[in-house]
Amino acid sequence: MNNELREELQWRIQAYLDNELDPREAQNAAQEISISAEAKALFTELSATRQMLRDAGEEPRTVPASRDFYWSAIQRGIEAAERTEQAKPALRPWWLRLLVPMAGAFALFAILASFLPQGSQSLSRGIPLGPELPPTFRDEVESTNPEVSAFTFRSESEGVTVVWVSAK
Amino acid sequence: MQIFPQLSLLLRLVVLCGLVCPALAEDKKPANDRKLAAVLIWGTDEEKPNDPNLKEVEAKLKGKLKKIFKWQHYFVVKNQPFSVKPGESKSLTLSDKCEVKVKESEAEGLEVELFGEGKSVVKRKQSMPLNDVLIVAGDDKNACAWFVVVKPEGE
Image (cartoon, rainbow over all chains, first blue to last red):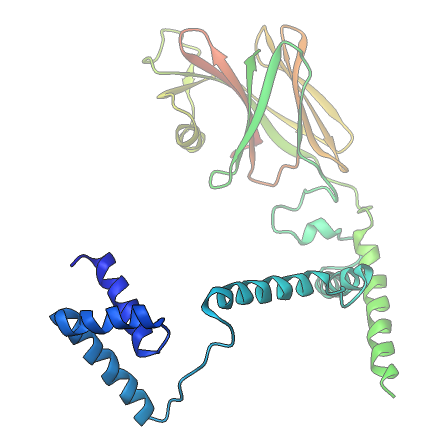
């Protein structure tokens, strides 16, 4: 018996055990259990499992809706929960949410900056790149000839910045 | 009574800000000359040409070049040391066709402008930490390359 047929048989016998089959299907299932060794073994196993659960105090759960509507009811429940989640209003206004990290960042900056040398020393002089760094700087490359293009790359390990110039 | 710790924190932040702001202001101390060198280099895979004026690039710079570029040999065409002060600009002629203008600015760092045959080719503004090297380079004929290296003198 292939897996598909075996699975179908399992469902059928489980449904038979749970009294979920109509009389004609139940009769067919009973007949199959009496004929097929595999069906009989499965029925015995499922019956034993069911009995074991009962002995352990596990109460049988009744599906609150018919099988046809049970899963669609679950789906509707999930969709309704998602809609509720989406419609939930923001707990705090946006500016307040922005203010908290900004205040934190400012406080951290202020504390760090207070450790820098004061007086004639500029902020950049606290950066260990070299004493001749300007207070503010921007690295930029500008191709001044329309017939050439330039791109920049940098090797941090070698401390080298390369501007490669090529004809367009 | 919880307002006092918050007020205290606010006051401390204001005081800290007052300390930091002067540190952010521009440095009024007169800046020293910056000693740099502009080097025109020729990169090739061929062995040393017959030109006696060409010298092999010194080991440290050659090591950097070989780690970044593909060429096997690097020869110095011209090495020109110079110094530049903030606000000052220097023009350096490295060959008949190649000229470099270097300007130091406290606000924007080092500005290097390359001229080829008298025409401006490319301009680069660069913050130059002490040991940093700036290379403006391009392809040359016969699968060779040229490099204009602006570096701290002795680097």
